[in-house]
Length: 132
Ligand code: CTP
Image 1 (cartoon, rainbow, N blue to C red):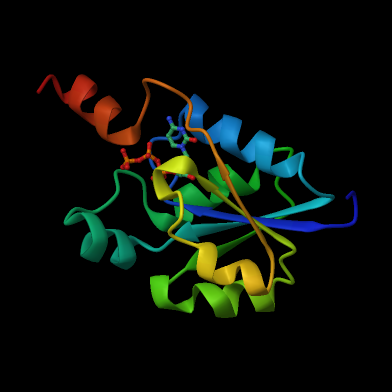
Image 2 (image 1 turned 60 degrees about the vertical axis):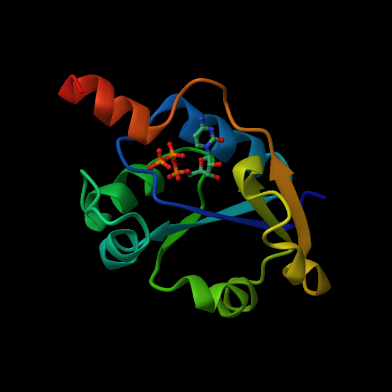
């Protein structure tokens, strides 16, 4: 258990407690936690808008967290298998908003979906702060 490498992915923009909780819970599943932080370009193509904080800023925030051992930039959604192999992942953790979507990787690692923290998201925060 303690020797396992856990990996998780996300944008982690406008960092909030839901982000912290999934990182803490992911870290408990192994001895080393690696986090893939999605690139600005990936977010623009995926969500149609740039993140509030740049990838360099988002990486710096996530890298500074106590449970996080290493971070890297996730440039492409298609490269997930390569990232898992490259970082020696034994466990892939995703929020349950992604439930079932990463089962294809269960041939190389354990795939775990954790429940999202209720009632908070980056999108909701941006809307609240901007008053829309
Ligand atoms: N997450 C969570 N609980 C929340 C929000 C996010 O557990 N309330 C998890 C997601 O499931 C994901 C990770 O945090 O595994 C990164 O999510 P991300 O998409 O960056 O954050 P969101 O707040 O969901 O962003 P958005 O509103 O832009 O979709």
